[in-house]
Image (tube, rainbow, N blue to C red; front, side, top):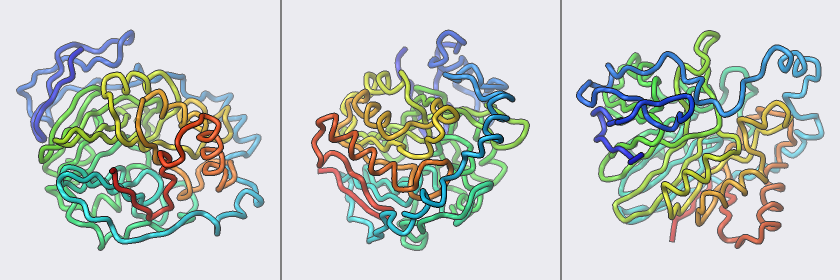
Length: 347
């Protein structure tokens, strides 16, 4: 299938219907319909790559009580890397990234400032408060040219942060999630299916698959899609933002369709217990394998050191990803294990 492109605010094209056998295909639609009228399916459950936990698994989780680290696992919170600094200068030909924490990045690419899954709140629903402050004060951000959202979970789609954005900010979201933003009076909302793309200011944004799911209320499981993003500037620089994902076959396919990824922003935390989270969150070793599957040049870890979402010790993701990187024989300077608030610039 050829990749499709549409300018922001217009309907992306999709030439072939999706099926359960090939969920990577966009579903057929009328390219002349405005975005708000696009007929998305009622559910995206056919895109799941593993079944969601059932009653027996929920009962086991409640019985074992293993959703948070032990007191020993929390002891290293003061040692989590946090080193905020000024945003690097970034002209039209420069790609720079700054980690604000969790899956929130300030990506400077093609002269644009792009936010990924922006969460600037101290606390999100159902979890303890942040264990490290936000790495970039909101007032220090340059004007935001675009926002990309990977899926609708509360630690990736934060309503209080979204309210801080001007309502004419271009927002790029998974299929089915546009209504959430339009209800909040955002006027430049583009919804994409997997393998579709759009452009903002000369930068191309491709929405790509992930091994995950979606849910925001008791009744909307998998009603909106989930995925990651590949950003490409006019000079050909590519940044891949994985969002939230388990390990699986999609990484190799993303690398095949988007060869030459310069930087992969990959999650390494919120992985324990494995029997509960294996299908939806990569552990550090799987993240390194995903990096290799992608054929990317550089990796920057994320999705750790911010919110305590699972039971591994808080510093363990960093130690394990460094060890896995060394075992794989990869060049140390290609692992950008940034502190919260840290920045790096593509050479």
